Amino acid sequence: MVQHSFIWIGQKDDALLVYFCKEGQELGQTTAIYTNNIYETHRLSNLLGALGIPATCLQLDISKSAREAALDKIRRKECHAIITTDIAATTQDPPISKVDRIINYNIGWKTTFQIYTQRTSNLRDASENSGRMITFMKPYALALISRLEREDPNFILAEYEVNMDIVKACDVQVQNAVSENPSLRESDTRQVRAGFTQVLPLNQLAHLHI
Image (cartoon, rainbow, N blue to C red):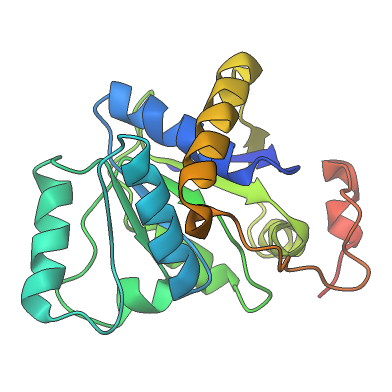
């Protein structure tokens, strides 16, 4: 059974991503990271690589052999993180490899229940530390969770506890990497839709309609 988790996001998206990837690397786990666009796919792959976390990415314009090589790195655990968009993950062969954890770094306003469940199909069987889907709670994610709760009464979402001291250390590493290479900086363009700029408690999610 998939373990659905969330974490509230402030201004440390990248630091939290590094935290989770390092945690997975220490546990010998593989992680798939879903973003909304190819820019973020490349940026995050380069950022993780700069911080010593082997990562690869999928994109639509790579050859089949390059795609197979990227997926093979995940299967062999030469890389512990693969970054992709939904389109790059689902529209080409071979399909994305099974992973231990999935991070929803970005949830777009077009993300549907079907897309979310398609992502979960890429998870290995759940165990104590694997089979987990972690969603970064941004404005559109709130709306998606509301839809998931309406469409699936068995959907249970729990907050993922992190060690904030380690997250702060990861943030320092991210800032140092960005100072050396400004192209690694997170885009200032935030996906904010009118009416969803305020973070709401979970007990209010059922009132969101989008």
